[in-house]
Length: 566
Image (tube, rainbow, N blue to C red):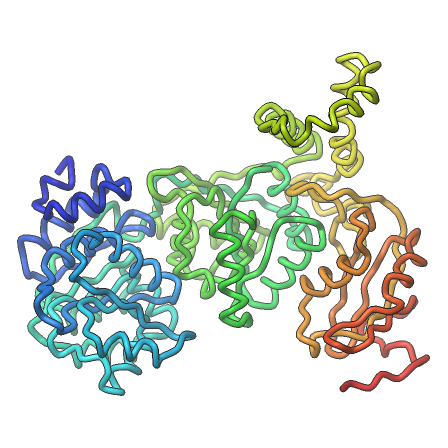
């Protein structure tokens, strides 16, 4: 079909999706909508993330709901809270001009009492995570013995997250005369087994090849020493000034460590992993969705359900062991018809994983050279010039300052003024990447990172997205009587320090966060200013004590004073 109208959808639905910008159906929508409107046969839909699967099953379901009945007629199961909320939002948008159709989201981490109250009023479509759905079924608050449609969205992800037993229980207790729809990006054995046990002669619809990568995603890899991965990551970010992407790490600890390094180096980044509270997770995700974060460092589990269509890059700080997980990662870019790049920072022992992913996923990796200082400086310079050309001038706000500016700059000729302006912003790029080493592993100089780039603790202090002014020089180490026991993590500690210093030109170095106390570094030329800033400081009503110390991390705190916690 060339347009949604040709599928036989109701005018109310056509009007709603037209307002959402839907013009032509995607391949999975084209094949699925027609089938679901014309047939009660079970369906397996195979398509990559971001290809429009929600509308593929959502539009036919909404059309076939009986608004006169108060019974729950459709149940959509999905792996995460975020995806649950997104599907619910989409369903409400699709049914905008069918106000008698009600949709409710049920998921963990939110009040179950509020969800029970919503269900008691009567809900036609329930979208939920398996754990919360099963809980509500066991409480006899969610009745699924009358449902006509049961959807498993991102089925492979639900299995990866350990929901198999919950799914078995839900599927076996649902009404037998139902239409079951299973949507997945990959088709592992476990998914095939679910189809065999709980589906009746399903028709298989595929948009693209099984277990294959999205066609509009490029797959690049950089070969470096394992110890140079973070430096390579910084260069990849620096050579892409407008990067907006997710960095995938293997463990929660590594995720937080990489995020802490990026934040300390001035990058616009944050972490997302299982150790965060739901409130912290929601805050990070809101900042990322709205574009206030450029780089999100995440584990695979934490990133499931993230629905952001305009990501430019996915970066694999570690390659996953399972090729299917790589497909899920890379499928988060290149969505909604856009192009994207999936980057892997690889060391020699991981090269076999590249070959395995290529063979299993029918994709081709292209090796790229880690950019050198000249390449990065060139990209940053061009980006700076483009920003100047495209900046909007608010003449009303700056008008009263113009006489002073003209007086100060009026005697400088045009060429010199341009050179000075560019140098003001650009000199630090040139200084930082002067004599920058080659990080490519197959080069003679591979891995020989200089102290200029490593800084203390292996983390360079200059950064370029966004730019943060810094000075090269020695750093002093300070003790502070606050740590993780006070509810602080490294980003919060950096914010605490920066708030009290009030001077953005003072550079904060490495932060070692311990349980009851911590250490942090400040440029040595600001020792006295730092001590003065904390002389009468408090945190949560308790006096802060900051002292200069030569001790190394994990040593005992200075014994000059003893601190009693309230």
